[in-house]
Image (cartoon, rainbow, N blue to C red; front, side, top):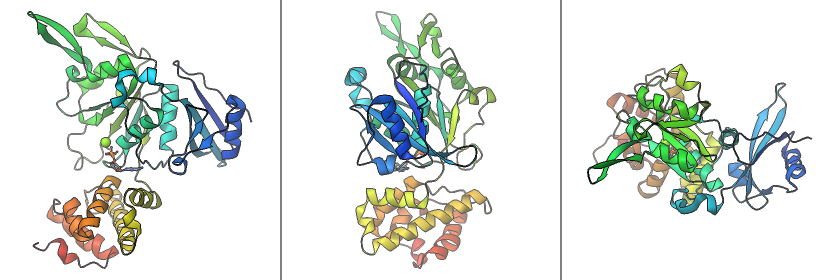
Length: 371
Ligand SMILES: Nc1ncnc2c1ncn2[C@@H]1O[C@H](COP(=O)(O)OP(=O)(O)O)[C@@H](O)[C@H]1O
Ligand SMILES: [Mg+2]
């Protein structure tokens, strides 16, 4: 098996390899680097392996054009302390992230090839967590910017500010800082903001890979060799769920590679929940946990079928919150606090009559009763 080396656009050392199975992939890595990848305590969950002292192998399982299994890997160098410099506080701590749908591999691919990556999916499916975990693995700083309807180019690119003595100086915005210094730039809720902001980013996302600071004598800030760009989007086809989201222009979209982040499978969610809350895997909590996972499955089916105009996202994030409160309050009272009490009457009745009464044997009148 010949490893295929992709020549990196930047100075990033990286390698793309593939094999019929994990063993063949590892052999290809060894042939290319002299090192055999080693599993870490997290490999079973994050599909990432250690190579040598400071490189990581991100593994994804795919099918070839004929439907045969192919295991692909991307080898990336971790960040050195010298590269991080004074910015250790911007490197996210290593948390628990359960890879699924080849998401970490795709983040690595976008990093290797320096292609901006747009992650779109419902709220709470783990988009932010994915990029933060990827950064934690690499030891890279993250520049995270929450965009919204009132975000301006001043916020992202920078603006002139008084510096004393009646003079003004240009202060870099967060995007400019990331582009200058390197790191993972994470633009959150990209479609909640407007055209003006997208246009300001065009040059950065284009072949020129540079920002122009018009207010600073048109200074051109070229993308640092270690700057990578990620963004998150909520699906615009659900305006009732994400008011204020805009359809992105074709001109903007073509500048991004994109990945749909779907709901994690039931097994994956069970692992996420019992890893976070080991008590959920004990005694009577076990049965409660299964019911909670059922509730999530049915709620998502109602959402995606769009049959009953059920505008509610039962996300992984919400399950985490529900499970945490369940350990203190029991599942019904916890459901009220975690999500139920805030729903409108119509959504409540769907929850009560078509989800809870269907998958649980709980006395659901407690959902609406006075406390
Ligand atoms: N794959 C996953 N592994 C571990 N935790 C996850 C995963 N997906 C979601 N979560 C949990 O859900 C919460 C919400 O995720 P987040 O990244 O904030 O969602 P999004 O950015 O898509 O709205 C996270 O804090 C984390 O606890
Ligand atoms: Mg997020």
